[in-house]
Length: 183
Image (cartoon, rainbow, N blue to C red; front, side):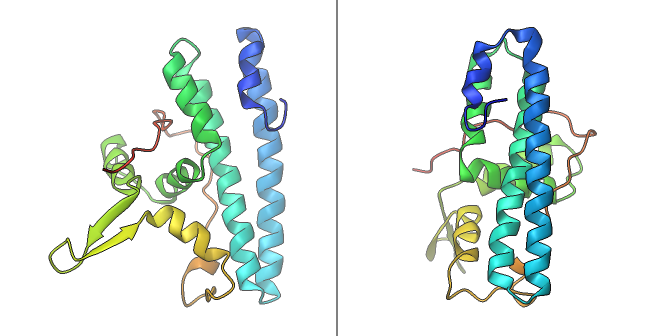
């Protein structure tokens, strides 16, 4: 698999695409292990901000692996779905949604759909009357706040304790739907 050129897989014969996806999964797996290990070492050295940034990178790499699995599951006949999966591979919001979806323990696919539909909004309203304040997307906000020097990261905020989602063979369905824009 060519690094940083996922769309080039369409130039390969369909019979060989799964082998290429497998190579990509192996590269991503090694990257997740390395980033997670480095994050643990930084956290052990009480460098929580750096650890949170690396954990976020590891989570996004794990999400890329899940997107490749969805790409393999959706097949090559539906060009719209293939394009959406490939687009999701490069978008921070889409990868963050994968992390959130696999981080919980949803009871069924409908629960995952509902959860993701709420998380994919660019902006949302909240407050005592549900229209008092406008907030930006929490997935993107969490990602950016982990890298800000003024942000306190550690056991108090929970950002220092984020998990890397585990790959699971028991999941069904694909989550390569493009992020919806609000408005």
